[in-house]
Length: 106
Ligand code: FES
Image 1: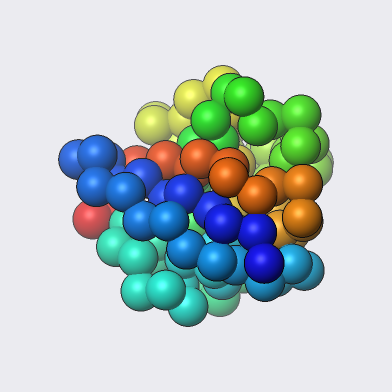
Image 2: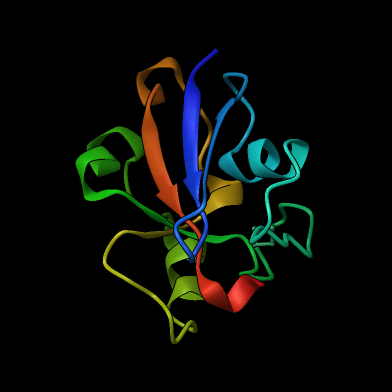
């Protein structure tokens, strides 16, 4: 399984195996990682699964879809590599990927 490195806002790192095909959000929830709220359960309506993809990995994750991009636009904490973690499906190519979580979700 690919290893995803989730980094909390204070620098605390969690390197966990996440099954291919599930989302970055679910991978964080399954591993009880702080900073992933996911109030809507992955329906792409709440923005509480905000994360920032390390710039070295954005080619692998692709870009946000229309609805996701619209929601991200409402966030004051949006960064150039921001994504909603419930909209990113984990693939083998993401092994080693670094994903930061915003302070606003603590
Ligand atoms: Fe609600 Fe991702 S979990 S938008």
